[in-house]
Length: 178
Ligand code: S3P
Image 1: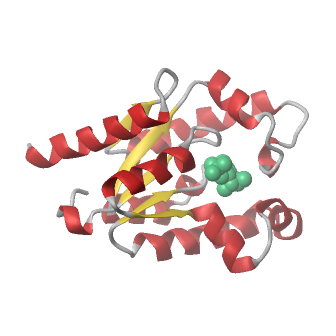
Image 2: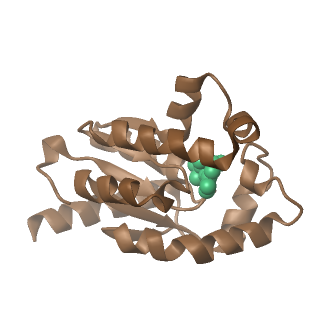
């Protein structure tokens, strides 16, 4: 939903490795907005790493925490929020994301996602024998959910972070002058 620019929130959704946090940080800086990352917020609140939460509480425990954090953070105004890749699985989270800000789907090819995530061992869902196959399955499951709630889709394979930021800002501006 589009709001007046002083109240505007921008929520970035997309798979692990799509670049939500990197793009989000620069997008926030460019728009003088506050930046939040739902994973970082969970780590700060619990004092535990994401992998540790998955180990102790399972994925369902992590999802409960994620849902609370998404609900809390989306109630703020004037923020850019990079959401964890699985936050759209929850229908209440999908609803608050669409109703409290502009939702931007940061999309990338499986090859790019795989390359960007392959050296980072902090994502429990990808610490498996065949992380490429996992990403493929997640993309199949989630791409329709990302598209369902996205106000715009940004393809990042062939662009720099700065270009992605520029695209998002100009599309938001264009939609507000329509
Ligand atoms: C997850 C994505 C991760 C993190 C957790 C689960 C997912 O966040 O929330 O490891 O289910 O896709 P990023 O998308 O920021 O990597």
